[in-house]
Every structure is written in structure tokens, then in C-alpha cells.
Length: 272
Image (cartoon, rainbow, N blue to C red; front, side, top):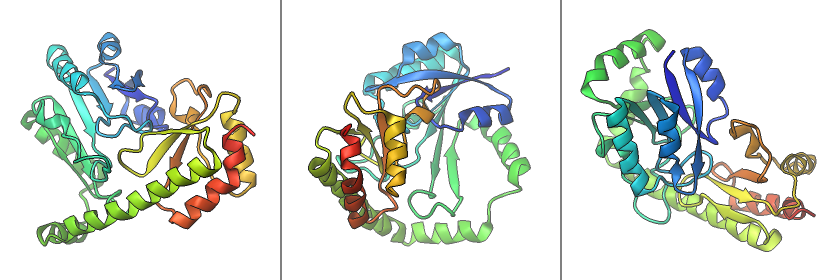
């Protein structure tokens, strides 16, 4: 059976996808520098799936040294890297991070989507893959869904060619940046003991709760107050609730809603 390495923490539906694909999944820890390439090599995986520009859900960026180590691992192990570039268009601290695909084009399959930049219901994406894999991937795509909606593809192509897609992204970055700032400000006011990370890009941040706080208890108590919070534990391969962390999404909320929500649960976030 083909062995596929996934980031840990990572997508919470990994086990179901692996069962459907008939592969064995091996979790590999992620730290402040991204995926641990040494631990990855020890798994003897033939494929790794990762989100190097803005790791889901921790939000860390894969460090330059690890990018080079990852490319070297793929070459030595005759392995494939699947690069999920799901929200790199929305970066707030600098220009978008370069893709791994440019570092090792013969070893990387780069994936992108407009479900984040335009609308979740618009299920269009793309991939850039080594030439040797193109035929097999195209065949799998055809067998899997018989092709993507043509009208949707033509509309997206027109949007890109006209320059309107770029203008939309510039506007959207401003909108999400303001929501991000509202989250930071609300936490500073109502829960100053909470530390935020993963804010450099995307639509979510990771809240590190103070020691006494219990992740599951905070989530449950917030729900009673009609505020939806999501713990980090479902994204960990072990389900561990320590250290207590929350994944705070702000993409589909207004600045006023963000401020009100944090105000309503600030005492919970501080362990009160």
C-alpha cells in the first residue's frame, strides 16, 4: 500500500480521504518552522501533502532551510510533494510566499483554488504537475467527475484575462485585513492573556489559551453564549487537547460581529 505523509496537525478528514484513496496515512509533526523533514524521511513515505505557504491549521510558513531539505528528500526518496496552496493570495505582512513547485518542478504537484478567493461554492481549481504524471492525473480527473463545469471555467478565464480578478483580490485583501485587525484588537481588549499566531495570511488565526484553560470546556461554554469556537484537538492525529488552542476564523464575519463575539467570550478565553 502506498504510504502518504500528512502534516500534524492537519486536515481533520485525512483518515476518511485516505480510506477512500486506499493509502496508508502517516502523520508528521509541524513546528514553528513547518513540517519536520527529518521525521518525514523516517516514515519512508512516497508522497507528502502539505501547505507550506500558510500551514493548515497552525498558519506557520515552511522555513527556507526546510524547503531545500524537502526538495532534497523528494529527490533522494524518489517521492512526490503535493503542495496545497489554498489561500496564499491573502498575505498581509509581505508579498506572497514563493511556491515549492518552483524549487523542485519535477517533484512537486502544486494545487490552487478559487474557492477561497471568490466563493466556496465555486469548485474550480488547478494543478501544475511534472510532465510524467500529466496523463495519469488527467485520466483520474475524467473518471472522477467527467470534467468541471465549462461555463464556470469560461467565466473565471474572462475574469482573469480582463484584470478584474486581480482588482478583486486587492479589494478582498483590504477587507480581510480589517477583519484580522478587528480580531487582534478585540482580543487585546477582552482577553489580553491570549497569544495569537498564524496571522500572516489567510482567514484564520490560532489562539493559544493560558495554561489553566481547558479547550473543550471553552468551546462548550462559548456555544452556550451563541459563539462558535473551534479547538485545535480535532486537527491533531492523537486528538490531544494540550496545549489548549483555538482555530479562530474571521473570513466570513464582519468587524462588528468579531468584536461582539470576542467580547462575549473574553473571560472564557482567559480561563475565567
